[in-house]
Every structure is written in structure tokens, then in C-alpha cells.
Length: 106
Image (cartoon, rainbow, N blue to C red; front, side, top):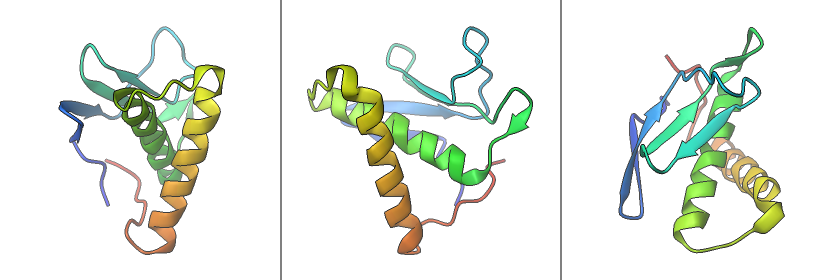
């Protein structure tokens, strides 16, 4: 399954930008930019390419951020951990049930 080019979250449509090169913070794997309505996903870090599962996990992590934000859920300092847990769980469920088979995105 390929990454979608766009995703609607609540009333907002976000463009999925992959691969995205982070120039200000090379350690980022992904980012939601609510102003530009973009979900940005890196394909590598420090010259090491991400495998498909990492890219999908990052995609679901960023989706979790925006879904929780739109729902008005304030996670405070736990935000990254909660989004990681949601992303890992959703991706594992989708793979385990055959709903998604991660492929290296093009």
C-alpha cells in the first residue's frame, strides 16, 4: 500500500509530502504543519534510509498528533509518547489484520 497523497482530518485536508528533507532539524522523522496543511515525512536520516514500516509508523504518529489536536485533547508533555503508542498500535493492528502491507514508498 502506498502512502496517500492527501488525508482529510476533521475539516482539514493535508497534503502528504514524502520524501521531505528537514533542513532546520535533521533528526526529525516527520512533522505536521497546520499552517501549510502538510504532513511531512523524511525518507532517511544521516544517510540511512528508513524502511517502509518506519515511514508508515511516522505517518500514523503525525496523524495522531493532528487527530488529538482537532479533538481538543491536551497531552502536555506526554504528547510524543502517546502519539508513538497510538502509531505503533494502529500500524501493528493494520499489518496483523492484513489491512496494510508496508511497501517502500516511491
